Structures are given as structure tokens and as C-alpha cells.
Image 1 (cartoon, one colour):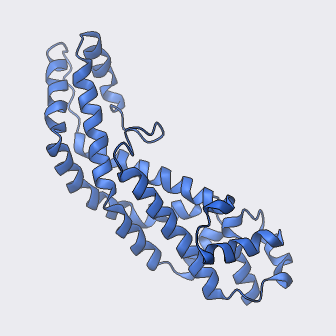
Image 2: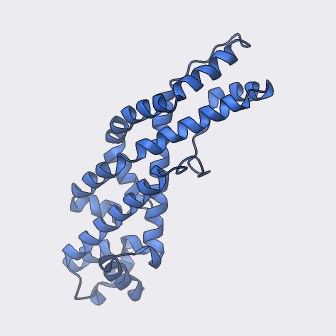
Length: 236
């Protein structure tokens, strides 16, 4: 049972396709790897992945220059955007979009301690759930454990950042101008929208980092990760 548990953890980030493969390999487990090595390796992988995520997204243009996570006008406002651009007011829209992304970049700085806390609280059942899950099982774990905390932490940062870069003003300008030409005024909660999209972007990037550590030896940047995941690769 102990060897099987070790192997379940060991194979989690290396792309092992079935639990049976893990069990079949149980006689070849590296004697230099303990349960604690494996759990520490998993937690270290998650810590590195989440730190990489927040570092990338909290940098200038971390959201704005990344097409995968860039925050655009909400769907209900896309008609507003199209109308304003057709009226030669594209610069107002551009300022609003830039401001939303700058707010998300600023808020992303607060994500790291929340992820670290979730990692510290991870139990063996949590780890096993991740190990037997998909290539983004750890990301799903984080969504379950941190979404509310991230929302609570991001909201004041988003509010402050939007105010700091005059996003609220730009947003107000956009809809004030649009509403002059429309019989159906648009009323969108900018702060809530940006907070939600910022969190979506965080989880998207966490999934990218998780996949890299599972599949790419170059992403294993510490001795422990090389020991844990290198041993797994050698056995496949």
C-alpha cells in the first residue's frame, strides 16, 4: 500500500495514463524517494507554478499583452464599443480596456499568499484527488479552495486600481456617451466584471504552469522536482 501511494503521487505530474501502470511499476520505485519526498515535490511544484503565474500576470502588460487572458469589454457592452468606435470615440474605449487590465495586473499581486495557504492545507486525500485527476486537476483544486478568498482579496485591489487609473471615469464616459444615442441604457458593474475576469485569467495561467511541470523536464527547476519527476520519467 505504501509503495502504491508513493507511485500515485510520483506519477501525477508525469502524465501516467492509468492507475494500473502505477501499480505495475510498484516494484521499481526508487528507494531514495520517501512519502515525504513525494508530497513535498507535489507541493513544491504547485508553489512554483502559482508563483510563476502571479509573477507573469502582475507584471506590466501581464494581462493587457496576453491575448489568452486580456480583459475586453463584457458581452453586453460590445454593442456599446462598436457604436462608440463608429462615432470616432475609439480612444475612450481603448482607455477603458487598458484600465481594466491594469487593475487586474495590480490585483494579481495579492494571489500568491492565497495559493500558498491552500497548498499548506493540502491533505493526503486532496493530493490523491489531484493525482488521479486530469492534467489540470491541481488547478481545479485551487478553484475549489481559493476562488472565494481570491474574490475577497481582489475586489478592493480592483476598486483601488480602477480608481487610480481613472477606469471608473473612462467607463462612465463610455456609457454616458453611448446612452445619449440609445433608448436602452447599459448599466454594468465594472469592478465585479474585472474581478471575475482577473480570477479567470489567474486560473488559466495556473493550468498552463501545471501542464508544463507535468510534461516538460525543463520546468522542473529545483533538485527535488528533478529527483521526483526525473525518477518517474526514467521508469516510463
